[in-house]
Length: 229
Image 1: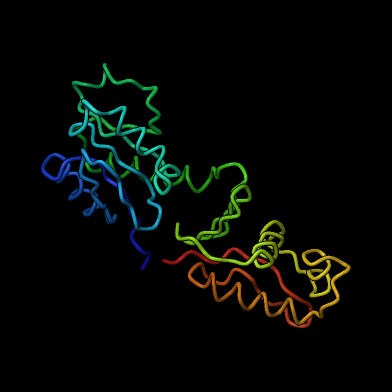
Image 2: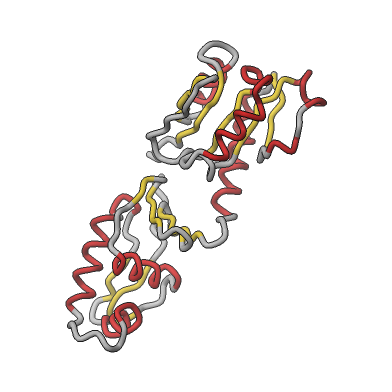
């Protein structure tokens, strides 16, 4: 079974936000409520698929809530979906930075469709400098590697090896080629170094599936693992 995607929900602990959380659970998501107002947003779960801002609960503080989301380290990279009361739609400041909005009262099928669209956009339009390989993302600007949103602690050489492989998916490289491309031709260590680093990469990214495949008698290549059903 596919693990349930996490959603951050900013709103009230009571209805209508409580009803929204219940609807998201019915759709198979794992919503986590961030009660508003709050002096500091704490988020320890993996990066969410999206952040839902229930403006029915925070309409008077919409600008501040959007600012908090956009500045939060774990939330700022996720799409922002605003749940807007229909009677407030004409007065909503669209410059606040929503990726999408849904008018309330909404139908459950419409909510499901909006979330599927956000998920599709996220998967098909990676940010500049971000490489995705299945459940793994690699950010070339920040040197961050994440699996399902959780940071993976790699050494510099492990990172450089992974980056080289994912930049060249499905292409097979010999150990000698990897040694020269990643460590440099003036490196005096043996090809065993490559095997050791590949083994460490596999151990540290095992939650993302089999990202690096051994081609018997030749070397290694990066592959896109099959999605879990």
